[in-house]
Amino acid sequence: MGFFQKQQSLFLLEGGRCRPLSLATFAMEVGMFGKDNINLAHQPFINILLYGLTGVLLFRILLVCFR
Image 1 (tube, rainbow, N blue to C red):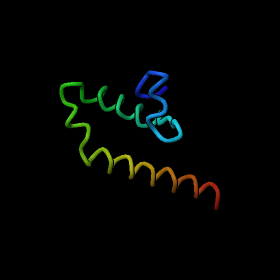
Image 2: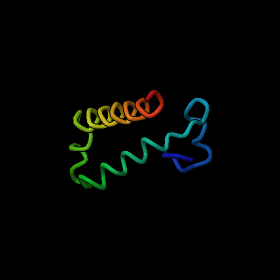
Image 3: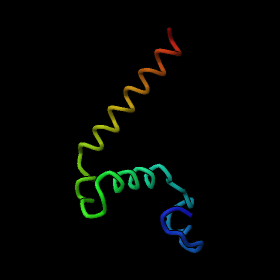
Image 4: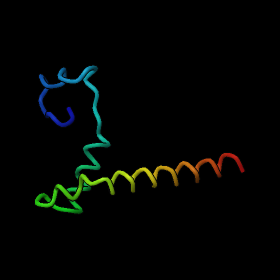
């Protein structure tokens, strides 16, 4: 049921989609920075870090696929 945790709230989003990855990353940020420092978690550094890790992962996968 995602973020809302209620059956009737499933229709607030078009298609009733679930986004578990965003919930997982928010949980990791709260785990790393704590609930009191939530503003630290939503800095561009986190987005740049995730973007860079995605690029490295894609590069490694392409190296394996196209030796």
